[in-house]
Amino acid sequence: MAGLLHQLLSGLASGGIYASVALALATIYRATHHVNFAQGEMATLSTYVALALIGAGLPYWASFALTVVASFAIGVAIERLLLRPMARAPALSSVGVLIGLLLIFNSLSGWLFGYTIKTFPSPFEAAAAGGLLGGYLSAHELGATAVTLAMLLGVFLFFRHTKTGLAMRAAAYNPASSRLVGIRVGRMLALGWGLAAAIGAVAGMLIAPTVFLDPNMMGGILLYAFAGALLGGIDNPLGAVLGGFAVGVIENLAGAYLVGTELKLTLALLIIVGVLLVRPAGLFGRVVVSRV
Amino acid sequence: MIAGRASLLAGAAVLLAPLFLFTGYHLFELTLTVATALAILGLDLVTGHTGQISLGHGAFYAIGAYVTAILMADCGVPYWATPPASALVSAATGFAIGLPALRLRGHYLALTTFALAVALPQILKYRGLEGLTGGVQGVVLVQPGPPFGLPLTPDQWLYLFSLAVAAPLFLLVRNLTRGRIGLAMVAARDHPLAAEAMGIDLAWLKTGAFAISAMITGIAGSLGAIAVQFVAPDSFPPLLSIFLFVGLVVGGIGSAAGAVIGALFVQFVPDLAEQVSKAAPGAVYGIALIAVLYLMPQGAAGALASLPQLRRRGALAAARGESPSRGGTGHVE
Image (cartoon, each protein chain N blue to C red):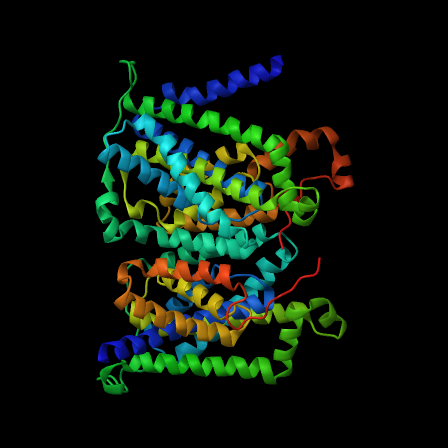
Protein backbone atom coordinates (compact mmCIF):
# COMPACT_ATOMS: atom_id res chain seq x y z
CA MET A 1 0.00 0.00 0.00
CA ALA A 2 2.79 2.36 0.93
CA GLY A 3 4.42 1.45 -2.38
CA LEU A 4 1.27 2.31 -4.29
CA LEU A 5 0.94 5.61 -2.47
CA HIS A 6 4.53 6.40 -3.24
CA GLN A 7 4.02 5.61 -6.93
CA LEU A 8 0.86 7.73 -7.02
CA LEU A 9 2.54 10.73 -5.44
CA SER A 10 5.67 10.63 -7.54
CA GLY A 11 3.41 10.11 -10.56
CA LEU A 12 1.61 13.30 -9.64
CA ALA A 13 4.96 15.05 -9.25
CA SER A 14 6.22 14.11 -12.71
CA GLY A 15 2.68 14.67 -13.98
CA GLY A 16 3.02 18.25 -12.82
CA ILE A 17 5.90 18.73 -15.24
CA TYR A 18 3.98 17.15 -18.11
CA ALA A 19 1.02 19.29 -17.12
CA SER A 20 2.99 22.52 -17.46
CA VAL A 21 4.34 21.58 -20.91
CA ALA A 22 0.86 20.39 -21.88
CA LEU A 23 -0.46 23.77 -20.77
CA ALA A 24 1.99 25.49 -23.11
CA LEU A 25 0.96 23.20 -25.98
CA ALA A 26 -2.73 23.83 -25.34
CA THR A 27 -2.15 27.58 -25.20
CA ILE A 28 -0.54 27.59 -28.64
CA TYR A 29 -3.09 25.17 -30.05
CA ARG A 30 -5.88 27.36 -28.77
CA ALA A 31 -4.46 30.47 -30.32
CA THR A 32 -3.19 29.13 -33.65
CA HIS A 33 -4.33 25.50 -34.12
CA HIS A 34 -0.72 24.49 -34.52
CA VAL A 35 0.91 21.67 -32.61
CA ASN A 36 4.21 23.21 -31.57
CA PHE A 37 6.85 20.58 -32.24
CA ALA A 38 9.55 23.00 -31.12
CA GLN A 39 8.03 23.58 -27.67
CA GLY A 40 10.44 21.25 -25.88
CA GLU A 41 13.59 22.64 -27.49
CA MET A 42 12.48 26.21 -26.83
CA ALA A 43 12.00 25.35 -23.16
CA THR A 44 15.43 23.70 -23.03
CA LEU A 45 17.11 26.80 -24.44
CA SER A 46 15.25 28.98 -21.93
CA THR A 47 16.50 26.75 -19.13
CA TYR A 48 20.07 27.18 -20.35
CA VAL A 49 19.58 30.93 -20.38
CA ALA A 50 18.40 30.75 -16.76
CA LEU A 51 21.45 28.67 -15.84
CA ALA A 52 23.74 31.21 -17.47
CA LEU A 53 22.04 34.04 -15.56
CA ILE A 54 22.39 32.17 -12.26
CA GLY A 55 26.00 31.45 -13.15
CA ALA A 56 26.53 35.17 -13.71
CA GLY A 57 25.65 35.75 -10.07
CA LEU A 58 21.97 36.70 -10.21
CA PRO A 59 19.69 35.34 -7.48
CA TYR A 60 17.48 32.41 -8.52
CA TRP A 61 14.15 34.18 -8.68
CA ALA A 62 15.56 37.17 -10.55
CA SER A 63 16.99 34.81 -13.18
CA PHE A 64 13.68 32.99 -13.23
CA ALA A 65 11.75 36.17 -13.93
CA LEU A 66 14.24 37.44 -16.52
CA THR A 67 14.13 34.10 -18.34
CA VAL A 68 10.35 34.10 -18.43
CA VAL A 69 10.31 37.62 -19.88
CA ALA A 70 13.01 36.78 -22.46
CA SER A 71 11.18 33.60 -23.49
CA PHE A 72 7.97 35.56 -23.90
CA ALA A 73 9.77 37.95 -26.24
CA ILE A 74 11.30 35.09 -28.24
CA GLY A 75 7.89 33.43 -28.57
CA VAL A 76 6.34 36.64 -29.88
CA ALA A 77 9.24 37.13 -32.29
CA ILE A 78 8.91 33.60 -33.68
CA GLU A 79 5.23 34.05 -34.34
CA ARG A 80 5.76 37.44 -35.97
CA LEU A 81 8.74 36.52 -38.13
CA LEU A 82 8.31 32.87 -39.04
CA LEU A 83 4.75 31.68 -38.56
CA ARG A 84 2.67 34.68 -39.55
CA PRO A 85 3.61 34.40 -43.24
CA MET A 86 2.68 30.70 -43.14
CA ALA A 87 -0.76 31.31 -41.67
CA ARG A 88 -2.56 30.42 -44.89
CA ALA A 89 -0.08 27.82 -46.12
CA PRO A 90 -0.93 24.11 -46.01
CA ALA A 91 -0.19 22.07 -42.91
CA LEU A 92 3.00 20.65 -44.42
CA SER A 93 4.58 24.11 -44.52
CA SER A 94 3.79 24.99 -40.91
CA VAL A 95 4.90 21.55 -39.69
CA GLY A 96 8.08 22.05 -41.70
CA VAL A 97 8.79 25.44 -40.13
CA LEU A 98 8.17 24.06 -36.62
CA ILE A 99 10.46 21.08 -37.27
CA GLY A 100 13.06 23.50 -38.60
CA LEU A 101 12.76 25.50 -35.37
CA LEU A 102 13.16 22.30 -33.36
CA LEU A 103 16.44 21.53 -35.14
CA ILE A 104 17.72 25.10 -34.85
CA PHE A 105 16.93 25.46 -31.14
CA ASN A 106 18.46 22.06 -30.41
CA SER A 107 21.69 23.04 -32.17
CA LEU A 108 21.67 26.43 -30.54
CA SER A 109 21.52 24.88 -27.05
CA GLY A 110 24.37 22.51 -27.91
CA TRP A 111 26.45 25.17 -29.61
CA LEU A 112 26.10 27.85 -26.93
CA PHE A 113 26.18 25.66 -23.83
CA GLY A 114 27.81 22.37 -24.84
CA TYR A 115 26.59 18.80 -24.81
CA THR A 116 27.74 17.81 -21.34
CA ILE A 117 25.02 17.10 -18.80
CA LYS A 118 24.66 19.89 -16.26
CA THR A 119 22.95 20.15 -12.90
CA PHE A 120 20.35 22.83 -12.34
CA PRO A 121 19.65 24.31 -8.91
CA SER A 122 16.27 24.02 -7.26
CA PRO A 123 14.97 26.89 -5.12
CA PHE A 124 13.00 24.51 -2.92
CA GLU A 125 15.72 22.14 -1.74
CA ALA A 126 17.01 24.56 0.88
CA ALA A 127 13.55 24.92 2.41
CA ALA A 128 13.25 21.30 3.49
CA ALA A 129 16.15 19.05 2.78
CA GLY A 130 14.62 15.85 4.15
CA GLY A 131 11.48 15.78 2.04
CA LEU A 132 7.90 16.29 3.09
CA LEU A 133 4.77 14.18 3.43
CA GLY A 134 6.61 11.48 5.28
CA GLY A 135 9.40 11.40 2.72
CA TYR A 136 7.10 10.50 -0.17
CA LEU A 137 7.80 13.67 -2.06
CA SER A 138 10.98 15.69 -2.25
CA ALA A 139 10.73 19.36 -1.46
CA HIS A 140 11.48 20.11 -5.07
CA GLU A 141 8.66 17.93 -6.37
CA LEU A 142 6.24 19.60 -4.01
CA GLY A 143 7.46 23.09 -4.90
CA ALA A 144 7.36 22.35 -8.63
CA THR A 145 3.80 21.05 -8.38
CA ALA A 146 2.78 24.15 -6.45
CA VAL A 147 4.30 26.41 -9.10
CA THR A 148 2.52 24.45 -11.85
CA LEU A 149 -0.82 24.78 -10.09
CA ALA A 150 -0.27 28.49 -9.47
CA MET A 151 0.61 28.94 -13.13
CA LEU A 152 -2.53 27.08 -14.17
CA LEU A 153 -4.62 29.27 -11.90
CA GLY A 154 -3.01 32.34 -13.43
CA VAL A 155 -3.70 31.18 -16.99
CA PHE A 156 -7.26 30.24 -16.06
CA LEU A 157 -7.95 33.62 -14.48
CA PHE A 158 -6.32 35.37 -17.43
CA PHE A 159 -8.48 33.61 -20.02
CA ARG A 160 -11.62 33.82 -17.92
CA HIS A 161 -11.55 37.22 -16.30
CA THR A 162 -9.49 39.64 -18.35
CA LYS A 163 -10.48 41.53 -21.46
CA THR A 164 -7.32 40.39 -23.27
CA GLY A 165 -8.02 36.77 -22.37
CA LEU A 166 -11.54 37.05 -23.74
CA ALA A 167 -10.17 38.66 -26.90
CA MET A 168 -7.66 35.82 -27.29
CA ARG A 169 -10.36 33.21 -26.98
CA ALA A 170 -12.51 35.06 -29.48
CA ALA A 171 -9.61 35.43 -31.94
CA ALA A 172 -8.96 31.68 -31.83
CA TYR A 173 -12.61 30.74 -32.08
CA ASN A 174 -13.60 33.00 -34.93
CA PRO A 175 -10.89 35.27 -36.35
CA ALA A 176 -13.10 36.97 -38.95
CA SER A 177 -15.82 38.03 -36.54
CA SER A 178 -13.25 39.04 -33.95
CA ARG A 179 -11.61 41.32 -36.46
CA LEU A 180 -14.99 42.91 -37.17
CA VAL A 181 -15.50 43.82 -33.53
CA GLY A 182 -12.06 45.40 -33.35
CA ILE A 183 -9.89 42.67 -31.88
CA ARG A 184 -6.37 42.71 -33.30
CA VAL A 185 -6.20 39.02 -34.16
CA GLY A 186 -2.55 39.05 -35.19
CA ARG A 187 -1.52 40.58 -31.88
CA MET A 188 -3.53 37.93 -30.03
CA LEU A 189 -1.76 35.11 -31.89
CA ALA A 190 1.63 36.62 -31.05
CA LEU A 191 0.54 36.96 -27.43
CA GLY A 192 -0.47 33.29 -27.41
CA TRP A 193 2.96 32.25 -28.64
CA GLY A 194 4.69 34.47 -26.12
CA LEU A 195 2.57 33.06 -23.31
CA ALA A 196 3.28 29.48 -24.37
CA ALA A 197 7.02 30.15 -24.60
CA ALA A 198 6.98 31.66 -21.10
CA ILE A 199 5.04 28.69 -19.68
CA GLY A 200 7.44 26.32 -21.42
CA ALA A 201 10.39 28.17 -19.88
CA VAL A 202 8.92 27.72 -16.39
CA ALA A 203 8.35 24.03 -17.11
CA GLY A 204 11.96 23.64 -18.25
CA MET A 205 13.33 25.32 -15.14
CA LEU A 206 11.12 23.13 -12.93
CA ILE A 207 12.11 19.84 -14.51
CA ALA A 208 15.83 20.49 -14.99
CA PRO A 209 16.74 19.78 -11.31
CA THR A 210 15.13 16.33 -11.62
CA VAL A 211 16.31 15.09 -15.00
CA PHE A 212 19.47 17.23 -15.35
CA LEU A 213 20.07 19.63 -18.17
CA ASP A 214 21.28 18.64 -21.63
CA PRO A 215 20.20 19.76 -25.11
CA ASN A 216 17.90 16.74 -25.54
CA MET A 217 16.34 17.04 -22.10
CA MET A 218 12.80 17.58 -23.30
CA GLY A 219 12.56 14.82 -25.94
CA GLY A 220 10.61 12.24 -23.94
CA ILE A 221 8.87 14.84 -21.80
CA LEU A 222 7.37 16.50 -24.84
CA LEU A 223 5.86 13.17 -25.86
CA TYR A 224 4.22 12.69 -22.46
CA ALA A 225 3.01 16.28 -22.53
CA PHE A 226 1.46 15.69 -25.97
CA ALA A 227 -0.19 12.56 -24.64
CA GLY A 228 -1.48 14.47 -21.64
CA ALA A 229 -2.73 17.40 -23.67
CA LEU A 230 -4.54 15.06 -26.06
CA LEU A 231 -5.99 13.01 -23.22
CA GLY A 232 -7.46 16.08 -21.54
CA GLY A 233 -8.35 17.90 -24.74
CA ILE A 234 -5.74 19.98 -26.49
CA ASP A 235 -8.03 22.99 -26.90
CA ASN A 236 -8.79 23.12 -23.18
CA PRO A 237 -5.98 24.37 -20.86
CA LEU A 238 -7.57 22.90 -17.75
CA GLY A 239 -8.14 19.58 -19.52
CA ALA A 240 -4.55 19.57 -20.77
CA VAL A 241 -3.24 20.09 -17.23
CA LEU A 242 -5.43 17.34 -15.79
CA GLY A 243 -4.36 15.09 -18.68
CA GLY A 244 -0.72 15.85 -17.90
CA PHE A 245 -1.17 14.82 -14.27
CA ALA A 246 -3.09 11.71 -15.38
CA VAL A 247 -0.33 10.69 -17.78
CA GLY A 248 2.24 11.11 -15.01
CA VAL A 249 0.27 8.82 -12.72
CA ILE A 250 -0.47 6.27 -15.48
CA GLU A 251 3.19 6.27 -16.49
CA ASN A 252 4.38 5.64 -12.94
CA LEU A 253 1.80 3.00 -12.08
CA ALA A 254 2.24 1.16 -15.39
CA GLY A 255 6.01 1.45 -15.05
CA ALA A 256 5.90 -0.07 -11.57
CA TYR A 257 3.27 -2.77 -12.01
CA LEU A 258 2.65 -3.38 -15.71
CA VAL A 259 5.22 -2.79 -18.41
CA GLY A 260 8.38 -1.90 -16.53
CA THR A 261 10.44 1.20 -17.11
CA GLU A 262 11.74 0.06 -20.49
CA LEU A 263 8.55 0.65 -22.45
CA LYS A 264 7.43 3.95 -20.94
CA LEU A 265 7.69 5.87 -24.21
CA THR A 266 5.68 3.18 -25.96
CA LEU A 267 3.00 3.76 -23.35
CA ALA A 268 2.88 7.44 -24.35
CA LEU A 269 2.54 6.36 -27.98
CA LEU A 270 -0.32 4.03 -27.05
CA ILE A 271 -2.08 6.79 -25.12
CA ILE A 272 -1.75 9.17 -28.07
CA VAL A 273 -3.04 6.64 -30.60
CA GLY A 274 -5.76 5.42 -28.24
CA VAL A 275 -7.10 8.90 -27.51
CA LEU A 276 -7.04 9.92 -31.15
CA LEU A 277 -8.93 6.78 -32.14
CA VAL A 278 -11.47 6.60 -29.34
CA ARG A 279 -12.08 10.21 -28.41
CA PRO A 280 -10.13 12.63 -30.65
CA ALA A 281 -11.38 15.69 -28.76
CA GLY A 282 -9.98 14.39 -25.47
CA LEU A 283 -11.84 13.94 -22.22
CA PHE A 284 -12.65 17.61 -21.67
CA GLY A 285 -12.27 18.97 -25.19
CA ARG A 286 -14.99 20.45 -27.33
CA VAL A 287 -16.04 18.26 -30.24
CA VAL A 288 -15.62 20.38 -33.33
CA VAL A 289 -18.29 19.81 -35.94
CA SER A 290 -17.44 21.15 -39.35
CA ARG A 291 -20.04 21.89 -41.96
CA VAL A 292 -19.31 20.72 -45.48
CA MET B 1 12.19 8.88 -78.57
CA ILE B 2 15.85 9.20 -79.39
CA ALA B 3 16.16 12.06 -76.92
CA GLY B 4 14.53 9.90 -74.27
CA ARG B 5 16.95 7.04 -74.93
CA ALA B 6 19.90 9.43 -74.87
CA SER B 7 18.89 10.85 -71.49
CA LEU B 8 18.39 7.32 -70.19
CA LEU B 9 21.94 6.43 -71.26
CA ALA B 10 23.27 9.64 -69.73
CA GLY B 11 21.48 8.86 -66.49
CA ALA B 12 22.92 5.34 -66.41
CA ALA B 13 26.39 6.76 -67.05
CA VAL B 14 26.04 9.22 -64.15
CA LEU B 15 24.86 6.43 -61.85
CA LEU B 16 27.65 4.03 -62.84
CA ALA B 17 30.48 6.59 -62.95
CA PRO B 18 31.11 6.46 -59.17
CA LEU B 19 32.16 2.80 -59.60
CA PHE B 20 35.27 4.01 -61.37
CA LEU B 21 35.71 7.40 -59.71
CA PHE B 22 35.45 6.47 -56.04
CA THR B 23 36.60 3.67 -53.82
CA GLY B 24 36.10 2.52 -50.27
CA TYR B 25 34.41 4.95 -47.94
CA HIS B 26 33.13 7.37 -50.56
CA LEU B 27 31.47 4.56 -52.49
CA PHE B 28 29.97 3.30 -49.24
CA GLU B 29 28.52 6.77 -48.63
CA LEU B 30 26.98 6.72 -52.10
CA THR B 31 25.44 3.30 -51.40
CA LEU B 32 23.86 4.81 -48.30
CA THR B 33 22.68 7.75 -50.40
CA VAL B 34 20.86 5.30 -52.70
CA ALA B 35 19.15 3.79 -49.66
CA THR B 36 18.25 7.24 -48.30
CA ALA B 37 16.89 8.34 -51.69
CA LEU B 38 14.68 5.25 -51.72
CA ALA B 39 13.49 6.00 -48.18
CA ILE B 40 12.61 9.58 -49.15
CA LEU B 41 10.85 8.29 -52.26
CA GLY B 42 8.67 6.15 -50.01
CA LEU B 43 7.96 9.07 -47.69
CA ASP B 44 7.10 11.24 -50.69
CA LEU B 45 4.35 8.84 -51.75
CA VAL B 46 2.47 9.43 -48.51
CA THR B 47 3.47 12.99 -47.62
CA GLY B 48 4.00 14.50 -51.05
CA HIS B 49 1.36 12.77 -53.12
CA THR B 50 -1.36 11.79 -50.68
CA GLY B 51 -0.78 14.73 -48.34
CA GLN B 52 -0.50 12.76 -45.09
CA ILE B 53 2.41 14.22 -43.15
CA SER B 54 4.58 11.48 -41.65
CA LEU B 55 7.39 12.30 -39.24
CA GLY B 56 7.89 8.62 -38.44
CA HIS B 57 9.22 7.00 -41.58
CA GLY B 58 12.49 6.27 -39.84
CA ALA B 59 10.51 3.58 -38.02
CA PHE B 60 9.77 1.76 -41.28
CA TYR B 61 13.40 2.14 -42.29
CA ALA B 62 14.39 0.56 -38.97
CA ILE B 63 11.90 -2.28 -39.39
CA GLY B 64 13.24 -3.09 -42.84
CA ALA B 65 16.80 -2.99 -41.53
CA TYR B 66 15.99 -5.26 -38.59
CA VAL B 67 14.15 -7.82 -40.73
CA THR B 68 17.20 -8.08 -42.97
CA ALA B 69 19.59 -8.29 -40.03
CA ILE B 70 17.59 -10.97 -38.20
CA LEU B 71 17.12 -13.05 -41.33
CA MET B 72 20.80 -12.86 -42.21
CA ALA B 73 22.23 -13.39 -38.73
CA ASP B 74 19.75 -15.83 -37.22
CA CYS B 75 18.24 -17.70 -40.15
CA GLY B 76 21.22 -17.73 -42.50
CA VAL B 77 19.21 -16.22 -45.35
CA PRO B 78 21.47 -14.75 -48.05
CA TYR B 79 21.47 -10.94 -48.16
CA TRP B 80 19.91 -10.70 -51.62
CA ALA B 81 16.85 -12.60 -50.51
CA THR B 82 16.07 -10.32 -47.55
CA PRO B 83 14.65 -7.14 -49.20
CA PRO B 84 11.41 -8.89 -50.25
CA ALA B 85 10.88 -10.05 -46.67
CA SER B 86 11.58 -6.52 -45.39
CA ALA B 87 9.10 -5.24 -47.96
CA LEU B 88 6.38 -7.57 -46.69
CA VAL B 89 6.90 -6.83 -43.01
CA SER B 90 7.13 -3.06 -43.42
CA ALA B 91 4.15 -2.99 -45.79
CA ALA B 92 2.09 -4.86 -43.19
CA THR B 93 3.24 -2.42 -40.49
CA GLY B 94 2.46 0.51 -42.76
CA PHE B 95 -1.01 -0.87 -43.37
CA ALA B 96 -1.58 -1.28 -39.64
CA ILE B 97 -0.48 2.31 -38.99
CA GLY B 98 -2.30 3.64 -42.04
CA LEU B 99 -5.64 2.52 -40.58
CA PRO B 100 -5.65 4.75 -37.49
CA ALA B 101 -3.95 7.42 -39.60
CA LEU B 102 -7.15 7.65 -41.62
CA ARG B 103 -8.78 9.53 -38.80
CA LEU B 104 -5.91 11.96 -38.37
CA ARG B 105 -4.98 14.96 -40.43
CA GLY B 106 -2.24 17.50 -40.69
CA HIS B 107 -0.56 18.22 -37.38
CA TYR B 108 -2.15 15.31 -35.53
CA LEU B 109 -0.88 12.74 -37.99
CA ALA B 110 2.57 14.32 -37.91
CA LEU B 111 2.47 14.14 -34.13
CA THR B 112 1.36 10.50 -33.97
CA THR B 113 3.92 9.29 -36.48
CA PHE B 114 6.58 11.28 -34.64
CA ALA B 115 5.58 9.50 -31.43
CA LEU B 116 6.14 6.21 -33.27
CA ALA B 117 9.64 7.34 -34.23
CA VAL B 118 10.41 8.36 -30.65
CA ALA B 119 9.11 5.12 -29.16
CA LEU B 120 10.71 2.69 -31.61
CA PRO B 121 14.29 2.60 -30.26
CA GLN B 122 12.87 1.74 -26.85
CA ILE B 123 10.81 -1.11 -28.30
CA LEU B 124 13.90 -2.43 -30.08
CA LYS B 125 15.83 -2.36 -26.81
CA TYR B 126 13.04 -4.13 -24.91
CA ARG B 127 14.38 -7.13 -23.02
CA GLY B 128 11.50 -9.37 -24.08
CA LEU B 129 12.60 -9.02 -27.70
CA GLU B 130 16.30 -9.27 -26.99
CA GLY B 131 16.60 -12.79 -28.38
CA LEU B 132 15.40 -11.44 -31.71
CA THR B 133 16.78 -7.92 -31.88
CA GLY B 134 20.02 -8.36 -29.95
CA GLY B 135 18.90 -5.65 -27.49
CA VAL B 136 21.11 -2.61 -27.04
CA GLN B 137 24.05 -4.43 -28.66
CA GLY B 138 22.25 -4.80 -31.98
CA VAL B 139 23.17 -7.30 -34.67
CA VAL B 140 26.45 -7.46 -36.58
CA LEU B 141 26.36 -8.76 -40.15
CA VAL B 142 28.97 -10.13 -42.54
CA GLN B 143 29.76 -8.04 -45.58
CA PRO B 144 28.61 -9.82 -48.72
CA GLY B 145 31.11 -10.04 -51.58
CA PRO B 146 30.43 -9.99 -55.32
CA PRO B 147 28.88 -13.18 -56.77
CA PHE B 148 30.10 -15.36 -59.67
CA GLY B 149 33.68 -14.26 -59.09
CA LEU B 150 33.02 -10.84 -60.62
CA PRO B 151 36.12 -8.63 -60.52
CA LEU B 152 34.60 -6.09 -58.14
CA THR B 153 35.40 -4.94 -54.64
CA PRO B 154 32.65 -5.55 -52.05
CA ASP B 155 31.94 -1.81 -51.94
CA GLN B 156 31.52 -1.65 -55.70
CA TRP B 157 29.26 -4.68 -55.64
CA LEU B 158 27.04 -3.30 -52.87
CA TYR B 159 26.66 -0.02 -54.73
CA LEU B 160 25.55 -1.90 -57.84
CA PHE B 161 23.26 -4.15 -55.81
CA SER B 162 21.57 -1.13 -54.17
CA LEU B 163 21.10 0.53 -57.55
CA ALA B 164 19.63 -2.65 -58.97
CA VAL B 165 17.11 -2.86 -56.13
CA ALA B 166 16.29 0.86 -56.14
CA ALA B 167 15.87 1.39 -59.89
CA PRO B 168 12.75 -0.81 -60.37
CA LEU B 169 11.16 0.81 -57.31
CA PHE B 170 11.74 4.29 -58.74
CA LEU B 171 10.10 3.04 -61.94
CA LEU B 172 7.21 1.60 -59.93
CA VAL B 173 6.58 4.88 -58.14
CA ARG B 174 6.85 6.81 -61.39
CA ASN B 175 4.25 4.63 -63.09
CA LEU B 176 2.05 4.61 -60.04
CA THR B 177 2.00 8.37 -59.65
CA ARG B 178 1.55 9.07 -63.35
CA GLY B 179 -1.46 6.79 -63.69
CA ARG B 180 -4.98 7.07 -62.38
CA ILE B 181 -3.89 6.07 -58.87
CA GLY B 182 -1.50 9.02 -58.83
CA LEU B 183 -4.30 11.34 -59.93
CA ALA B 184 -6.54 9.94 -57.22
CA MET B 185 -3.79 10.56 -54.64
CA VAL B 186 -3.37 14.18 -55.68
CA ALA B 187 -7.15 14.64 -55.69
CA ALA B 188 -7.37 13.17 -52.19
CA ARG B 189 -4.65 15.56 -51.06
CA ASP B 190 -5.96 18.73 -52.65
CA HIS B 191 -9.67 18.28 -52.09
CA PRO B 192 -10.73 15.18 -50.19
CA LEU B 193 -14.40 15.98 -50.37
CA ALA B 194 -14.43 16.41 -54.15
CA ALA B 195 -12.29 13.30 -54.53
CA GLU B 196 -14.79 11.28 -52.58
CA ALA B 197 -17.64 12.70 -54.63
CA MET B 198 -15.78 11.54 -57.76
CA GLY B 199 -15.96 7.98 -56.46
CA ILE B 200 -12.47 7.67 -54.98
CA ASP B 201 -12.40 5.36 -51.97
CA LEU B 202 -10.33 7.59 -49.68
CA ALA B 203 -9.89 4.99 -46.96
CA TRP B 204 -8.50 2.39 -49.33
CA LEU B 205 -6.38 4.89 -51.19
CA LYS B 206 -4.78 6.38 -48.08
CA THR B 207 -4.15 3.05 -46.34
CA GLY B 208 -2.80 1.57 -49.56
CA ALA B 209 -0.52 4.55 -50.07
CA PHE B 210 0.72 4.20 -46.51
CA ALA B 211 1.44 0.49 -47.02
CA ILE B 212 3.33 0.97 -50.31
CA SER B 213 5.19 3.94 -48.86
CA ALA B 214 6.23 1.90 -45.82
CA MET B 215 7.23 -0.97 -48.08
CA ILE B 216 9.58 1.21 -50.14
CA THR B 217 11.11 2.82 -47.06
CA GLY B 218 11.46 -0.64 -45.50
CA ILE B 219 13.38 -1.92 -48.53
CA ALA B 220 15.58 1.16 -48.18
CA GLY B 221 16.26 0.14 -44.58
CA SER B 222 17.14 -3.33 -45.79
CA LEU B 223 19.71 -1.87 -48.22
CA GLY B 224 21.03 0.37 -45.48
CA ALA B 225 21.54 -2.57 -43.11
CA ILE B 226 23.37 -4.61 -45.78
CA ALA B 227 25.61 -1.64 -46.54
CA VAL B 228 26.42 -0.77 -42.90
CA GLN B 229 26.53 -4.44 -41.79
CA PHE B 230 25.25 -3.43 -38.37
CA VAL B 231 21.93 -2.53 -36.80
CA ALA B 232 21.29 -1.27 -33.27
CA PRO B 233 18.40 0.64 -31.68
CA ASP B 234 20.45 3.82 -31.56
CA SER B 235 21.14 3.67 -35.31
CA PHE B 236 17.51 4.70 -35.76
CA PRO B 237 16.90 7.70 -33.48
CA PRO B 238 13.80 9.89 -33.92
CA LEU B 239 16.07 12.35 -35.73
CA LEU B 240 16.34 9.87 -38.62
CA SER B 241 12.66 10.41 -39.38
CA ILE B 242 13.14 14.15 -39.19
CA PHE B 243 16.13 13.94 -41.54
CA LEU B 244 14.04 12.04 -44.08
CA PHE B 245 11.42 14.76 -43.80
CA VAL B 246 14.07 17.46 -44.25
CA GLY B 247 15.42 15.62 -47.31
CA LEU B 248 11.93 15.40 -48.76
CA VAL B 249 11.18 19.10 -48.38
CA VAL B 250 14.64 20.33 -49.42
CA GLY B 251 14.81 17.99 -52.41
CA GLY B 252 11.31 18.73 -53.57
CA ILE B 253 7.92 17.28 -52.78
CA GLY B 254 6.24 15.04 -55.30
CA SER B 255 9.31 14.39 -57.44
CA ALA B 256 11.63 11.41 -57.84
CA ALA B 257 14.53 13.73 -58.70
CA GLY B 258 13.76 15.55 -55.47
CA ALA B 259 14.21 12.32 -53.52
CA VAL B 260 17.71 11.92 -54.98
CA ILE B 261 18.68 15.56 -54.35
CA GLY B 262 17.24 15.36 -50.85
CA ALA B 263 19.23 12.18 -50.15
CA LEU B 264 22.45 13.83 -51.34
CA PHE B 265 21.69 16.78 -49.07
CA VAL B 266 20.96 14.60 -46.04
CA GLN B 267 24.02 12.43 -46.66
CA PHE B 268 26.70 14.96 -47.42
CA VAL B 269 25.78 18.35 -45.97
CA PRO B 270 26.12 17.23 -42.31
CA ASP B 271 29.60 15.87 -43.03
CA LEU B 272 30.63 19.26 -44.36
CA ALA B 273 28.88 21.15 -41.57
CA GLU B 274 30.32 18.96 -38.84
CA GLN B 275 33.76 20.29 -39.70
CA VAL B 276 32.56 23.65 -38.39
CA SER B 277 31.03 22.44 -35.15
CA LYS B 278 29.16 19.53 -33.63
CA ALA B 279 26.03 21.64 -33.42
CA ALA B 280 26.22 22.84 -37.03
CA PRO B 281 24.46 19.95 -38.89
CA GLY B 282 21.21 20.39 -36.99
CA ALA B 283 21.27 24.13 -37.51
CA VAL B 284 22.02 23.73 -41.22
CA TYR B 285 19.14 21.27 -41.58
CA GLY B 286 16.77 23.57 -39.72
CA ILE B 287 17.77 26.72 -41.59
CA ALA B 288 17.68 24.93 -44.96
CA LEU B 289 14.24 23.53 -44.17
CA ILE B 290 12.76 26.92 -43.29
CA ALA B 291 14.55 28.70 -46.13
CA VAL B 292 13.28 26.19 -48.70
CA LEU B 293 9.72 26.45 -47.43
CA TYR B 294 9.86 30.22 -47.82
CA LEU B 295 11.94 30.67 -50.95
CA MET B 296 11.21 27.62 -53.11
CA PRO B 297 8.32 25.58 -51.73
CA GLN B 298 8.74 23.05 -54.53
CA GLY B 299 12.21 22.23 -53.30
CA ALA B 300 15.45 22.03 -55.23
CA ALA B 301 13.99 19.72 -57.87
CA GLY B 302 11.03 22.04 -58.42
CA ALA B 303 13.31 25.05 -58.70
CA LEU B 304 15.57 23.27 -61.21
CA ALA B 305 12.60 22.09 -63.27
CA SER B 306 11.16 25.56 -63.49
CA LEU B 307 14.41 27.14 -64.74
CA PRO B 308 14.10 26.31 -68.48
CA GLN B 309 10.40 27.00 -68.35
CA LEU B 310 11.02 30.43 -66.94
CA ARG B 311 13.65 31.18 -69.54
CA ARG B 312 11.32 30.18 -72.36
CA ARG B 313 8.30 32.05 -71.20
CA GLY B 314 10.24 35.00 -69.90
CA ALA B 315 8.22 37.48 -67.97
CA LEU B 316 4.94 36.12 -69.31
CA ALA B 317 4.79 33.30 -66.81
CA ALA B 318 5.49 35.63 -63.95
CA ALA B 319 2.87 38.06 -65.14
CA ARG B 320 0.25 35.34 -65.32
CA GLY B 321 1.26 34.12 -61.90
CA GLU B 322 2.11 30.62 -63.10
CA SER B 323 5.38 30.34 -61.33
CA PRO B 324 5.34 27.42 -58.94
CA SER B 325 3.74 28.46 -55.72
CA ARG B 326 2.82 26.71 -52.55
CA GLY B 327 -0.04 24.97 -54.30
CA GLY B 328 1.94 21.82 -54.91
CA THR B 329 2.18 20.89 -51.28
CA GLY B 330 -1.54 20.43 -51.09
CA HIS B 331 -4.27 21.93 -49.06
CA VAL B 332 -4.81 20.23 -45.76
CA GLU B 333 -7.17 21.43 -43.03
